[in-house]
Length: 230
Ligand code: ADP
Ligand code: MG
Image (cartoon, rainbow, N blue to C red; front, side, top):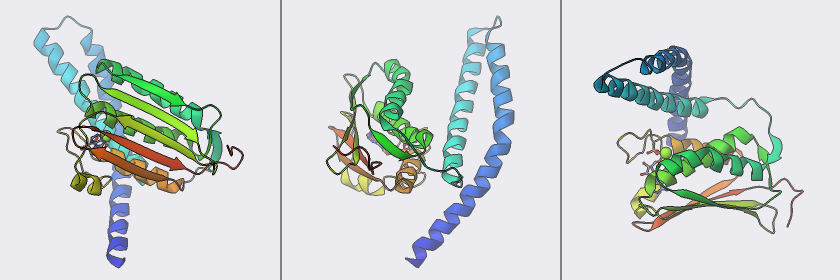
């Protein structure tokens, strides 16, 4: 236990340092991205256009790493409040639909009306978006992704995000959520770390079922708000 505590502390210090550096880096990066975009419009050669496109993509990737870092290190100052989980989930699917369409995938929804949660809506949306993004990246052609949410008899809300993608072997499932663990060439390995941290703070749980070559189901259970027992 002691070892784990020290590890947690170290990770905290590192994240806090990273967060302050990240803040300083974000603004100049936004400026550079803006100018890159302005350049795009001019009469350029195809090669030049490609260089600019790649530059913007790489800036976005760096931005993603920074954003994930920031949410790991962010001290929790905002008060938890009741919010519509139904809206949070519908909006998250909406946000990721464009990315899904780019990959010829449709995200199916089976989301109950009137589900409420307690926490920060933006945080749980980050969880949904990260998991949906992974699902989209895991499926190939004929990919199917289903996002479902329903209240259970104990007043909890059960959310499942299911894909028929690459799946994971058991040894990979064990290390899921460790910082920097990624099998992707351009992955950050921070997406799920952030998800686990946020859901833990909300006193919820994440369970993952996966079968290599068959697909993966993420199940998130969140405590309800008491007023929504079904
Ligand atoms: P990243 O997406 O940047 O790699 P994540 O923390 O989001 O980092 O995910 C960590 C790893 O977990 C991924 O690289 C991938 O190997 C695995 N993974 C996550 N979700 C899925 C999924 N739906 N299907 C298959 N593998 C997954
Ligand atoms: Mg990811």
